[in-house]
Amino acid sequence: MSAGPLESGAGTRPGRSLVLVSFATVIALFALVTMGGVVRVTGSGLGCPDWPLCHGKLIPPLDTPTLIEYSHRLLASVAGLLVLATAVLAWRSHRREPRVMAPATLALVLLVIQVVVGGLAVLGELPPETVTLHLALAEALLASILVVWLVAWRSASLTTGRLVIGSRREPDRILYLGALLFGYILLLSGSYVVGSGATTACVDWPLCQGSLLPVGRLPLVHVAHRFFAAAFGVLVVVTAVTAWRLRPDLRVAAACLAALFAGQVAVGAALVWLRFPAPAQALHLSVATAVWMNLVALTVLAFLTPARRTPSGRVSPKAILEPGKASR
Image 1: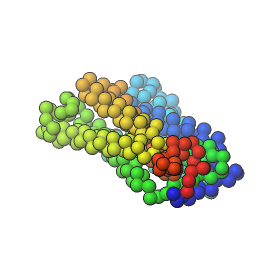
Image 2: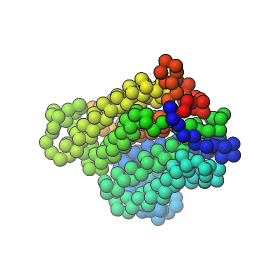
Image 3: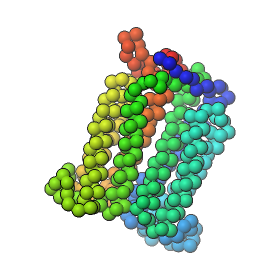
Image 4: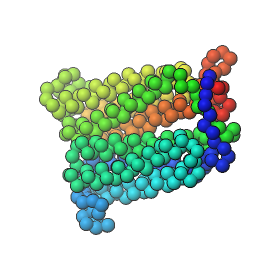
């Protein structure tokens, strides 16, 4: 097994501060995406019709739509400060670690773009394309900080001072990357369904208007999302089974991926059967984001952990716990 070390001397190894701050940032960004879903499904996106102020004030009148949107902006401010703190920690202490520096810097760039797009979305009265772009940036930002946390956590846990990267020839990684890309597209297709007004175009499940191919643009937009989800479900099963069989060190992530996707399907079905209540719509986005985060983690850990094999040829489950001792 060939491997290339990510050198991490005692003075530059990602330490506890970066691990803790980046983890807090992941939590804040996940909460922000969830809150953004609440804003959207409750129709509160224009609760603050101006930007960056709200009704021309720092503290606006707090009717329900304004309170929801204003809370979203306050949470975005906290998350933004945490993203900045994560980037500063990376720049100050881990300049020689590109697998920390690159995603941390990307996150800061995405944050700036996200703020601008969010403002444009409000000023443009929430066009669906801009709102979908806003979600795309939010999910990419969340993934970037998640990568920072995973790499920092794995590096900080080493006793050898080196994070060993496995062979690029391990074919299962292509599968994880493919699932990651597909999951991202599926997330954005769901956002487009909401933005186009197609959410309630299908009032039955798993069929739509009693058919696999309903009539009308909005029902077809809705059912196209379901077809994407079905194809993604097949890919999730293949990904989870492959990770379970080839990489015992990734079995927890594989099991979580399968469980989260099953939960997402259940939430999607319940959403239709219950006639689209706002809490279920928000939960649908939250679980979808959790699936996306799980895929990011699975992919990153697969690249960070070389598959250490036992004399029998099987991958050792201890590889994830002792990456510094992995075979090269």
